[in-house]
Image 1 (cartoon, rainbow over the protein chains, first blue to last red):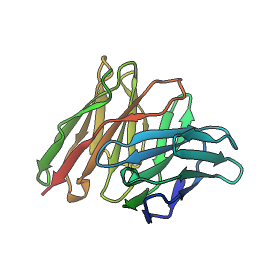
Image 2: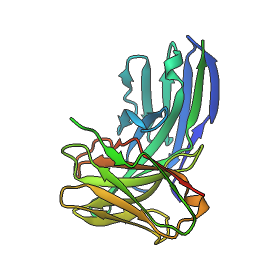
Image 3: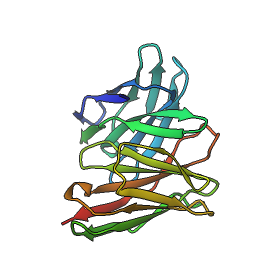
Image 4: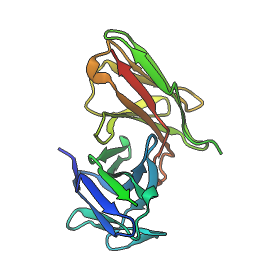
Length: 114
Length: 113
């Protein structure tokens, strides 16, 4: 059965700290791994990773994928209170006739205190 | 450029009733996927529609059905509602054959009394 496991499930830090969120997966027809940030409603897209070892970076956020060990990490440096959210890891499977589907982990609830 | 829009925002129903949720995809997208997100959990895939057909389905009973219209918008129907159907229902859109991320709407919060 396809599985995506995130850790930790919950994390409380102080502003300025650096955090690392983890995501491991087991899926059949892997196409990509995605990170989303969810505050109240819509998950908003952060990164899409398809190749091993290539770091994607956006401001204070970065992410990397290891397709051999089947995991990804999301790093946030110099955290701010606005980073408080649930961070979701999803793995995309794709087939020519079946299309794509995302399998999500439970999410990591990050709380950044001032 | 409008993103993914869903309606209604909130809905309260009682057990046994039926509900229809609606989704308009982002401009340029032709594929719509539906997800159910229970409180404190990650979203779970319900099904995906492309070219007005259900292309793939997750582990949900037949009470969950859908439709896609020629303008790519979509509906999710749930019959014989159960208390356990209370959740946030998310619609995501994408373009077929293009390896780009799915974009999500704000969801419909469904509460079953």
